[in-house]
Image (cartoon, rainbow, N blue to C red; front, side):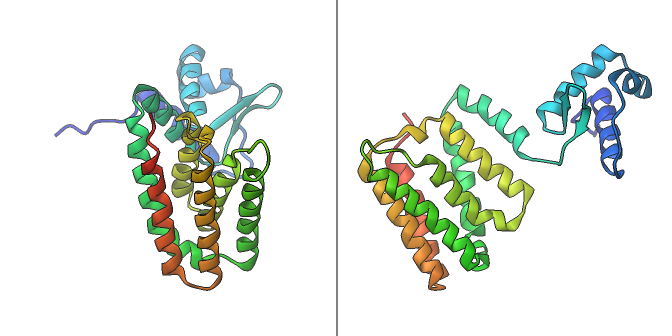
Length: 226
């Protein structure tokens, strides 16, 4: 069976070149003209291939700074594909949300056990700020706090792929319009769960915290995305 390539020869040529450069200390990327000569492709074709690398978050181009190789991130590729998918049909957000939920469940107890007192205090700060917003008049939607709360629990893993998926979920949460939901009783319920989860973690009741996380995640099923 013929092995199918995921990249064209020109795409592979540029990415392999960037991989080699990224592995070298303090390596610099030459100008487009020099790079075109090194790779043996036209500058017009090279610019097209560079757009792929930019969209994947591999490189950045800035005036007077030229081409810079960025630290690897998984999120740019996920987000761009997900943006297109949700634009086609919001059912894809449901599917991605299921993936995110399973990942959070899989990593939750390990994450909770690793949280320090300082981490828990930071998380409690998000809860207090969110509850303050909900008790203000008019109420404010604590979307940023919701995002920060969840992501802060899992950042302790420093797993590029896990965080790339979780961060993309929250960016696309906004794309799906869920950050504008304004049912006060629902939001109060959400943040009561968040507070209770942290209380369980503080008391080292990680299984109890996990049970509350599952119940919290099920709230989104009550909302729908229509």
